[in-house]
Length: 186
Image (cartoon, rainbow, N blue to C red):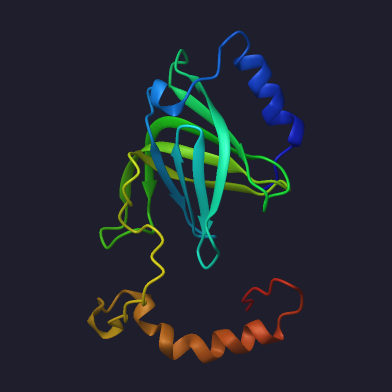
């Protein structure tokens, strides 16, 4: 999915007309910790500053500003920021609504209070969930050692327990698929 550069600006001008920008603390949201999957990333917003990080990359500190739209039926906040490593603005559109991260824990989902859509410089769109506060959410990016999977302990109807047996066939198919982003094909 790609952002249309003029779309976000048009929305800000139309919806935010006459509304002064405020800090995140002045909005109904407060500081926020957001994250998403595939690619794995996290964004922590605290007033006029934020930190963005993708798994395996260095954290990027951003300076920006928040524009709350707390008069809408479902409160929203737009945070726009910039940093030297990024060629343009990072724009996060955050909505106060239930958001489920289905990749985060053993129960199959973790519930958050906010949904986020991020438009990266260059047009890439990321989606994810946020919660109030800057403490790390369960399943946040952890650069420490990875846990060892206990595949034999999985239920017999859970096909993921067969992953190690299927890995050579998957790798062979990936190697036989042309293009910069190979996919497994049958």
